[in-house]
Length: 149
Image 1 (tube, rainbow, N blue to C red):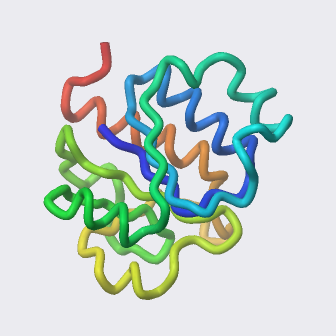
Image 2 (cartoon, rainbow, N blue to C red):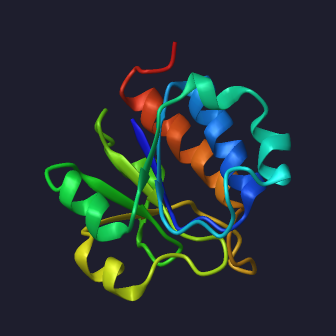
């Protein structure tokens, strides 16, 4: 299972997701540019020593990522989706794509990605923290594929 972060801009969230990836055997992909560097003290404080327990792949931009994984199924997590994550049938090699904390993903990605899902939320709120969203969706995807040990 793969977690893909599109141009992440909050170091603590990215670090928490990497730590989650280490604990749940998820492969992490960072689509550059990040809004911080991996030497940032806020990032290091949260990630601790967990980077060595997960595979982190960095991609220069979305086109480079897409070219490398063109045969993979990319699933966009977005508040704009109609389908709920718990009603979606995940596959063990899915690439679960999460947008920037500050702006999501650009409209052109919404247009080219056909698999879009969301987490049901209170209608008076905008969005969940990205690290929490990754934990919720990754847990369901792992459960469906019997990948949680």
